[in-house]
Image (cartoon, rainbow over all chains, first blue to last red; front, side):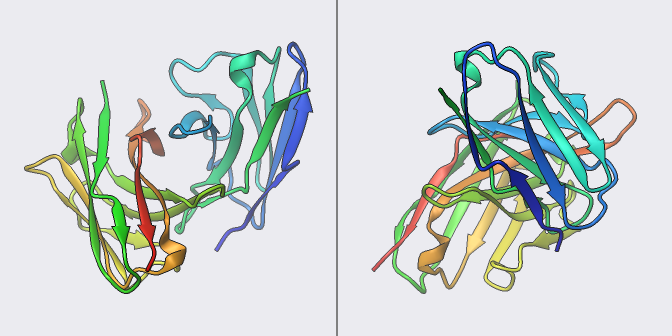
Length: 107
Length: 123
């Protein structure tokens, strides 16, 4: 199985900041990488697929990059509604696997 | 718009069975693969199983293989998860999620999610 490692597990940031979350796969997954946002008590929401493509309706403040084993999610101009937990997911092969999550908190 | 509504959760004793359902609407259910993903209290996301659009292909996480069965009824626009031999570690919110496809036909898993149903395995 492909292991997905996210870092950091949590971070504190201020409104207006730019933050970057990293995700590393235990083996190459090309660009079969998705990012999800989850707010407390809510279902996850798909943000990015194919490492860098935005889902419909997702603002351009979210961006993704990477290929192979190393990936990043960047959120620009953090707003109160962006404080949430973010997960990466590989879909190169089954079983699909998620990273452990990164909780973005208000400083 | 896409709507996925899970049901069937509840409290069940270890070793017993439970069947979850996911009612789909707002899209052509029979054209898309579907997933179950779970989240234990205070923990991260864990993928559970997937079924192809026509039910011909199924894959499972090792943690549930041999105990859980994913199925679908395209005539009823409904996805199921039959959970047998339940363990305390199966306690979680269970979400169903839908694949989607890009314009050029590339499959994107778990693009839309239901609100989840809580399963608690406890004596």
